[in-house]
Length: 105
Image (cartoon, rainbow, N blue to C red; front, side):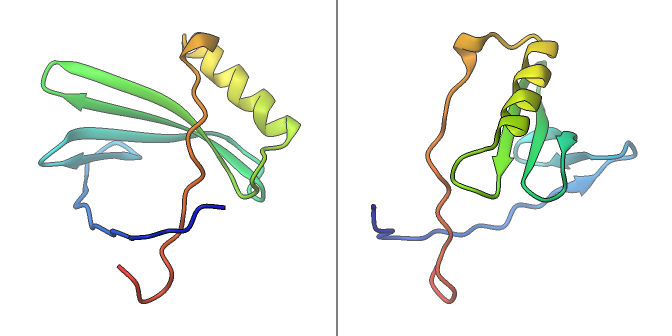
C-alpha cells in the first residue's frame, strides 16, 4: 500500500446555470454533470461534459464505494459508455482516490 506523502485540497467556484446540473467555472468553461445510473448505495455512473471555447470534452465515470465495483455497476457503466459512443479501447482504470487525513492539507 502506498503512503500519502502530501495532500492538496483546493476549492473550485462553480456558478449554477439555468439548466439542472449545468455549472460554469470562469477559469474552465461550462461543466455539465448527469447521474446516468445508480443504486444509491454502492455506485454511480456519471456523465461529465466540459465545454471550453468551441470544443466539448466528455467522460463517463464509474464511482464505487468499494475497491472493486460490482457486476451491476460494471454493466451499467458499459451500457452507458457504449450508448454514448465510447469505444472499449477508450476505457481506462484510474488510480484509487486517496482521501486527505483530517486536519492535513
